[in-house]
Length: 461
Image (cartoon, rainbow, N blue to C red):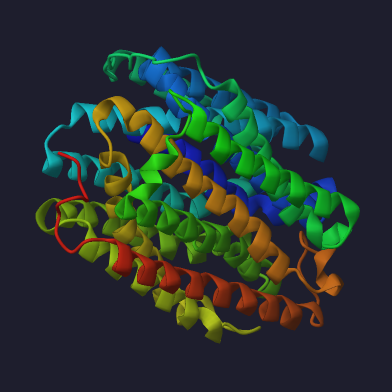
């Protein structure tokens, strides 16, 4: 049940990536609008995760988990029935509220229920595998639905799935004791972090169209930076902060969270543009594009539980470093993509990228949620998940700016490209792959420096 909530949250991103070209055609949406279809969901998800985790600690994790699934299902219904791009984006905002409530609660319940280090690592591995399964199933399922029933059912499918998950979770998910509050809920801190994430994401997504030096974009960057600085200063003064910034004094906690941001920036963001490559450059159907991208998710789903067992036996450092290096090199290996490169020539590179991420994700998560005692696990898991989703927002925005950087193809983001536009898309995709691969290798180098070689200090008993 807990993994099912994460499965739905990730599925809603990967399924949509395959449907974007058809949505663009049907609703006459350009590149910026298509980026917002992904980011409107992930932006709400990321900006409210920290608040959701702390509220779950105070009000009850199970109840918030159920509320999150309900919000996700309602948002899916609005999105699936939307007659215009504006209402579709509004539905995605409501849909994104669901994971912000249910994901930190699910991970916190796992952290609390499984006290033994090995069992906890194995449980986190299975929890992480559910996201890999969504990555594997999502593109293919999205292709089947788009080809057979249209893009609207990509969203409407979540409605009955949410209803089933609510019934099962109400019966089988245990209730966890509430964390005693030392002070009132930090509403101002929650507002600051929401403004910071929203302003920076807006600037990155709209900067390509409005111009990076335009007044609205410069103002958005300034507001985001000021809100972020204000958030850090405010939290350091609070007796019961929304985020205990002192957690980042731990080198292991800092390394795990920076790596999480980089992984989702490089990996999940890139999936959107691999799907676009298969459809817009190679001219494949949504189903064929989903099959091509699914190599990433299948390898991820295989590697994640294996990594969980390795963490229980040898600790999190070796699998985390190995996964970051393998995925980084695999991304750089995809630089041989060309205008006519077939799926058969690159599937193993995609699989290596997915397997590497699956290998490093479980140890990163284990470090993040085990750095504090169980009463503060909601905060730690929320911070970790917030940075993961912020990485996804940044990935879609920054990599999208690189892929569609040439004005000649930006207005054709939802359509099959003509012979002149295909080389421009591939050149932009190469820039995105350079950014992804080098970022992953840099994260590996940082982790190698900050993570101690022994288990002591990595996993809180």
